[in-house]
Length: 130
Image 1 (cartoon, one colour):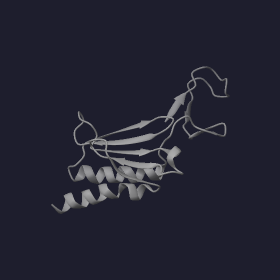
Image 2 (cartoon, rainbow, N blue to C red):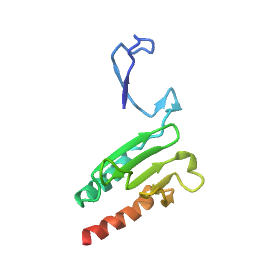
Image 3 (tube, one colour):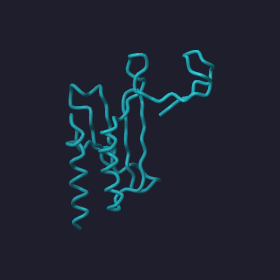
Image 4 (spheres, rainbow, N blue to C red):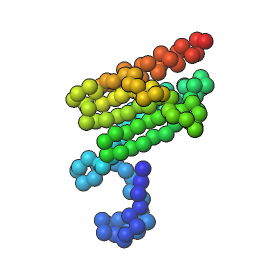
């Protein structure tokens, strides 16, 4: 994600320059939660395999100051079939990762992304066997 200064060189950046999003601003955490590269790679790998199996067709991502969300859809015009949320404020409690089902039910919570994705991995293996 990047943004353009557009207001001259107040921060030492010329007008129209693109500044890469680093996740930090002046030593403080950024104003939104995001996925790290390895996390997103793991999620997109699962997504690609689910697309190949004919289970999913579209996805959406949302980033707020509290949570990062990856939602996978069977069809674009319906509610997500699966939703993966990263909520760092729950890191010390039940874990920052949550997998939600199509009807909003919590399928899995945990501290590790791999463990939370396990139900979807099992579902994928079952659909490949059929």
